Amino acid sequence: LDGNRYESFENLFVENDQASQIAGFTSFTSEALELALLYPETWAAEESAADGFAFFTSDNETTEAAVARLSFPDAVSNEDSDTQAIQYAQDLFSSFDNFELASDIAPFVLGGFDGREETFTLEQNGEPYLGGVVAATVKPGVTFAFMYLSKESDFEADVELFNQMLDSFDILVSGVSK
View 1 (tube, rainbow, N blue to C red):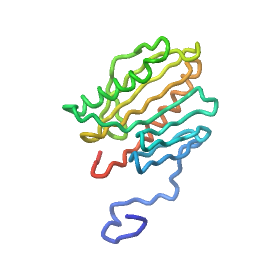
View 2 (cartoon, rainbow, N blue to C red):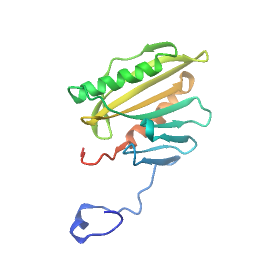
View 3 (spheres, rainbow, N blue to C red):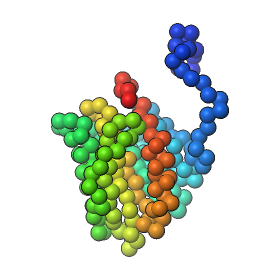
């Protein structure tokens, strides 16, 4: 707790000096967004806490991921918030040429929380891209949307990177447990 040891809590924590990160990945933690994840070490990470976003961009700038912390106060359920987050992402990406949904909304677990995923296709500068959004609401008023986008020709390799990022996604929202 805060870097200190307390005998009464010794049995709650496990220390593992042999634990390591995924090779080729580095950690990103945001106290403001209350999230942590791993991302490829060759990528750039940029946080815009005031806007509720974290951006991750490949070195060749053709593969991107972003995490948004969103709030939908009018949502009547977590599923409704997830649906609104997916619609939010659709609205962002629909300005690109030939934006089309590529899948139905499907269940997805993000950071240990039930969520939903939808994929899409679009064109950017005449190049075909594939992407998607995963949304999960952790409590009323706190929804995370993980959005990803890659050139179609690179997607098969990039999807593994996105999966590693999604698998490592950890929610640090106070008072919320998985």
